Image 1: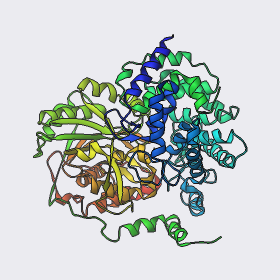
Image 2: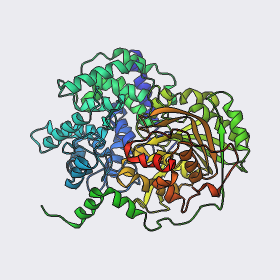
Image 3: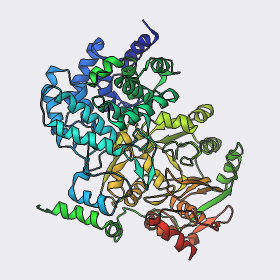
Image 4: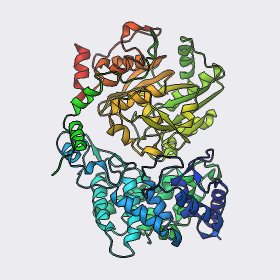
Length: 304
Length: 330
C-alpha cells in the first residue's frame, strides 16, 4: 500500500462520516444543507467499498430530482434546474435502477442552453455589445437558466452526454459538437480556460487551473486540437506550483486523461498539510478522485 | 420567423440597452427610504500598507459613534481573483487591521467573508493573494460565501426583476456588515466601490461564476436590489493602491494613498468617485441609491478626516465612461 492509497482510504472514510441523515452531503462540513455538487462528487469518489453510504446517496439523488428531469443545486432550491444535472447523471451512470431518472436528466440537458442562443441576443452580441470576444453561434450550457453558457457547466454536460452517446448513436452528439466548438471559442489566447471570457476589451484574460482541467476532461477524446495541446502544456507547467487541493486534484485528473505524468503531483496532493481539516466536501471528494485517478477517469467516461 | 411578445420584450432590452436602463429608473422601485439626514465620512492619509495601518484605522474609527460591542461583525473585502502585480483585491493587511480594530472596540465576533466572483477555487485565491497566511496568523475566521448554507430572501427593491435571491446564512445573520472595497474603475459599471462589492455575497454555488444572473438582469439594477436588501453598516475602502482603466481585473494600479471610512455606503462611494476625479452622479447606481439608501451630495456629508481633493488627472476609464471624467472636470 502506498502513501496515496492510505490517504485516499482515510479521506473516503472521512467523507463517509460526513454524510447527512438525508443521504446527501453539504458543501461545507459546518452546514446541514445537502447540496448536489458535493453529493455527486462524493458518490463518484466513494465507490462500491462504501456500499451503504453509496446506496443512501443514490436514494437522495433520486429523491430530489425535479419533475422536469433536472436537479436542484441543493435540497430546497427552486425546481427550475441547474448545471448540477450533469453531475447527477454522471454519478448515477452505472446504476441500473436509476436509468429512467438519468435519461430524464439527459433529456433536460439537451434542452438546456445558454441564453445567447436567442436570435435577438445573438444579434446584440454581434452588433452593439462586442467587448467580450465570443461567437454566440457556438453555445454550450449555463450554470442556471436564462444566463450565458460558461466553461465548467459546458464541460460537465459534455461528459454526461458522452457517456450516453458512447452507448450508441444519439441526438446528444450534435449538442456535444456545439459545446466543444463553444469551449474552443472561449479558450484563453495563450491556452487554458477561465470561467469563459478569453478576451475582454481586447485584453487576453488569464486562465484558471481548475476551469482548464475540467474543460480538458471534456476534450479527452480530442487531444490533437492545437488549443487542447496548448492548454495541456499550460496546465502541466502550472500544476506543480498550485497551493490549493481543489485545483491540484482536477489538474491531476486532466493531465492523467491526456497521458501526462502525474505521480509526483499525486504525491504532492496526498502530502498537503491539514487535509483532514478541509471544510469543503467537494474539495475532499475531488481529492479522492485524483488520488485514485484511474477509477475516476473511468467514472467520468474518460479513460486514459 | 414568428415574433412573440417575449421576443419583443427581449428585443427591447437587446436593441436599446440605454433605453432599458433608463426606463428602470423612471419610477422609484424601492420598498423603504433608509437614507439618513446626514452622513459621516473620514478620508485618512495612508501612504502604504504597513503595520501602522491598524493604529491609523483605529484612530479613524474613533471619529464615528460606532456601537459594535457584543456584535457579530462581517468584514466583506473585495477578493475576486489573483494576478501578480495587480491591484484587484482589498489588501489583506487592511482587512486584518480592521478585524483587530473591531475586536478592540468590543465586537463579539469578527469574520471575513467573501464569494470570489471569477475564481471558483477560493482556497487558491486566498493562498495566492496573501489572505490565507495573514488571516491564519491573526486568528480570523474566513467564510466562503460561495459555499455557505443558503436562505431565500425577498429583495427590498425591484430594479432587476429578480424579486428574491438565495443568500448566505452568514450574511443574513450578521449583526453588522462592513463593506471593504478596493477602489477601482469598472468596465461595465463605471466604478466598483462599497455597493458593487456586495455582488460578492451572491453565492456562486447557486448562481455560477461569474454571477452572470446579476449581469443579465442589469448590473446597476442588481447592485441597487442587493444593497437595498442587505444593509451595509459601515465602509472601509482601500484606496491606498487603487486601480484605473480597464478594471476590475485588468486595469492599472494607481496610488491614491487614502482609506475612506463612512457610515453610509452612498456617501462613501460618492466620495471615492470624487477622489478618483469622476462625477459620482453620473454613475447610475450611486445616483439612484442617493434617493433611498444614502447621501451622494457632499452638502449632506460631515467630513471628519482630511479634505476630499480630486486628482489633477482623473482616473482613466473605458471609453463608455469617459463622460464621468469630463463632467467632473466641468
